[in-house]
Image 1 (spheres, rainbow, N blue to C red):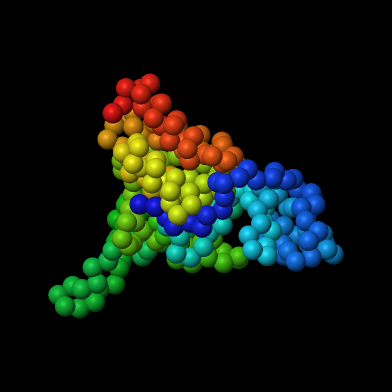
Image 2: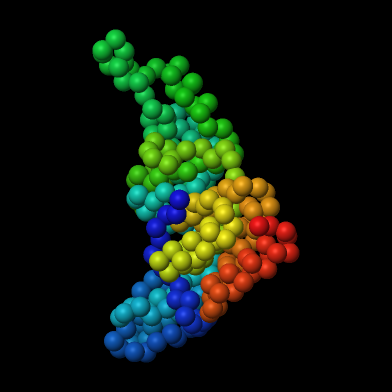
Length: 251
């Protein structure tokens, strides 16, 4: 499973690294995009990152950053706390997400052909579904600037993760893990024979046929994270996987 994420990096060249406040353009035809601000005819960077011109917009892709929730995103969360009626979930964002019982537990709404209200006893039982520290694949169903994002674990592919391993990388590097039109993630999956779920909040679930293959995939992902700003990365990663498989005695 791979979450569709817009490509942020062009692997055909090495981007220019810029710092906050640095002048990145005086071209009157360009407009400031993400990570940039315009003063008069001058556009300056807000972040430490990579300058990126796309069409008429000049952007700065930050090296580091937290996840900004968007409705419909499927992400990986960690149960951080709970109350009698909801869980609070770490989603690698400024605010924890809220997961209510009704968004986590399927209700049997018929009883002898009639509707039935849920009781406090039902809620108490339902709240045992997730425990502190559990890792879940969830979906953002509500978000705004004044309240915590709301998530659900009801829906196709949404679940508690009970196998494999989850790792976390810098959120801005996720598009590089995906690659242009999914090329990089396809390469990783095929050459490591691992299943992967890459989420926009910087977390990646990996499941291989053995721990050795999972470790290989993890090492590959961390290498991509370190070298995300460089050119020719896809070819280097392919060669790296081949070399590591040979050194580690993997088929």
